[in-house]
Image 1 (cartoon, rainbow, N blue to C red):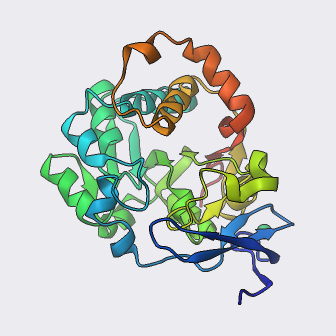
Image 2: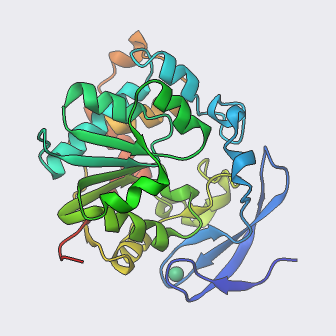
Length: 296
Ligand SMILES: [Zn+2]
């Protein structure tokens, strides 16, 4: 029996039980809660056996998220649709904070480090990843620089840019997560993150493809993320459809179509226009960017 109320993990007010959804990989029913105050939707009883969730099968696309295939991406960086996402992120970040060889950038929750490797090749700057577990060791074996958790303290207040690409929806305590990121940045630094926008799915959250409850446990509307960023000491900024989003959205569309490699048919599509149309429905560009405006 699920509790009918529990404290919102963003703002602390009462959140209400709104229903349950079965996982496909861990077949049990997960309880969803929604906060009327900050619009945060979250799983009250998340699966927290991280070693089991993010096992080797997960990174091969045989686990809780069948659309992940980190091995293919590591082995074939030139042949993966992930290239579009990497290119888009680099362009968006550069629009927010001009990248120079001195730019210090951490990709927080970098998975296999693919973005880190791509940025190093395309725009020389001081980029490092942060990730835990064996996937990080795999990336290190390919000489992709991945920080250990024990390295983070020495990076506090040094970064110009932190990216967290499709990370915060996996996090149980978003404000604490954002505070940890905030500590790494120096004044003027930015957090560019991507996550699904729950607002268009408010009335049918259980039908939303993003609610895979084993792994995605926190669902944000732009106003929720704004609140969480404020609580963590960021100044949220709204930049809308930044340069690069055409590529980021192109990747998301192709991933959901289960395409792994770029193909002729998709190359001829008018992505600058298509991505705008997709964004009118999904509104991923409505999420804020976090800026550090005051010294800690
Ligand atoms: Zn709340």
